Structure formats: C-alpha cells, structure tokens
Image (cartoon, rainbow, N blue to C red; front, side, top):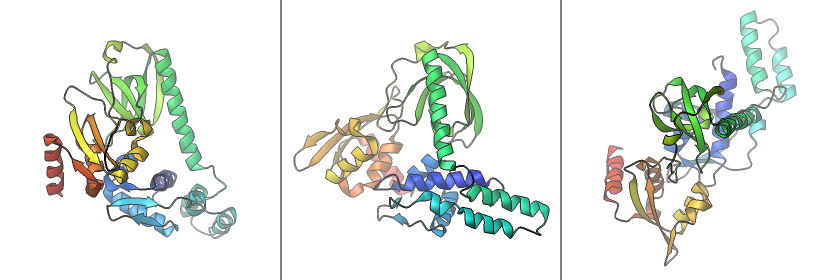
Length: 297
C-alpha cells in the first residue's frame, strides 16, 4: 500500500459499510457513484475485503452486497496485541522502512481512533456548517470538492440553500457558473463560511427534486413504469416511504410509477437491475435510452 493508508482504509470502511447497508445490494455503477472510485479500484478493494474475511456476494442481477452483521472493526483492524507483536518485528529495520510500517500498523490498530466514527463526525460537522450558512444566508466555499464526473478537485464558491429530501445532496447556487447545482456532501473536503451574504436568492426559488435527488430543469424526463411487488418493495427500500406512497396501486399486486426525472441515469439503473420485475409503459424517450444502454454494453 502507498503512504496514504489511512485514506485507503477509510475507503474500505466506506465500501464495506455501503455493501452491508442494503438488503438487496447495489449495482456496480451505483457503487462507483457512491464511492467515487474507478472500476479497477473497486475490484481491487473487493479482493482486499475478501482477504480480510468479508463474504462479498454478487446476485444474478449484478447486485453486490455483504451480509449484515459482519463486524467491520474486527476485520479491518489489528488488535492491540497484534499491533504490539508487529511493532516488535520492526526492530533492526532501516529507519524509513520502519517509520512507514509503523504508520500502517497505527492506522490499522485499535489503539488509533476509529476512522469510521471520524468519518461520520466529519460529515456531521459539514452538515452543521452548511446548515449554519443556510440559516444565516451566507455564501461558503466548498474546499477540495471532488467531482466524480470530471475527476477534478477544486474550490467552489456557492450559496447553499437546501438539502435534497433523499439526503446527502446539497442544493446551492454556484457563482462561477451562475447555475443552481447539486453537490454530494461526502465529497466536500471542508467548509469555509464567508462573510458575504446571499446575492442571488432570486434564483434559489422554484427548485424541486426527483426521486434520485436530481434537480428538475425545464426539460425533465417523463417516465411511467409498472412495478411488480418485488420491484415496488425495493423502490420503497431505496427511495423511502415518501416516493413509495406516490405509486399508484393496481390490481394483482402491481404498481404504477409515474414521475419526472432530471436525468434517466438513476431510474435507468433501477429499471435494468430489475428488468424481470418492471414493465416500461409508454415513455418513448426513456425506452430509447434503455435500448441505447443495453446495446452499448
């Protein structure tokens, strides 16, 4: 491993947490979107988790998961006795080698702080600082923001004004692009609260979100699907009761989903992942999108 082991360990914690958080698992593209890693890194991390004793499973529909109840801290850390024994083996090694190995052991031992708790604490602090900025109507800088799509890390000056109902997403007006944008909160390095008050509040109004947290623009995608009982149950588990209760109940334990989406990506993944349980009703543009995705693969 490279010298940024604490960061790598945190990534493994996040992946293990993610795969154990949902009974029906996640599609690969969903995992890549959540974690911000490449496909190659994902498969490498899966191998590491399996070597640590995790039983990583993949369903026939391509969903990855870890059985709930597998303890993260026991499998991804050394015990105090294990760490002490490893430290004793470092005696006599070259100084630089010994220093690097000690850093790795400390990062993986119970004697260090819990990285997962630290990660959750950091997220909580970020939420708190953003909420403060919203309540005070202040601009902020999102420092070291990692854009998954462009693969860049940059500072963004924005006017934050709300969180998406699905959580994990910040709605904010970005000054440089003069647009309302969405920002994944777990991709924000840190927050710098500015003294400058909101200047573009008139552009904040009228924002609505789709079931996947997308901001609806002037040309949303209209999608209508017929879900069987299994698909409806997964929809409720993934999207929550609010979006489940909007389904129209039909005969034969079937449900009609009719919603607007900012982009077909999220609902497309959902549909393709449950292809045997979903019927596309009308929606010619969405049907064409699915046809393109299927044949592209």
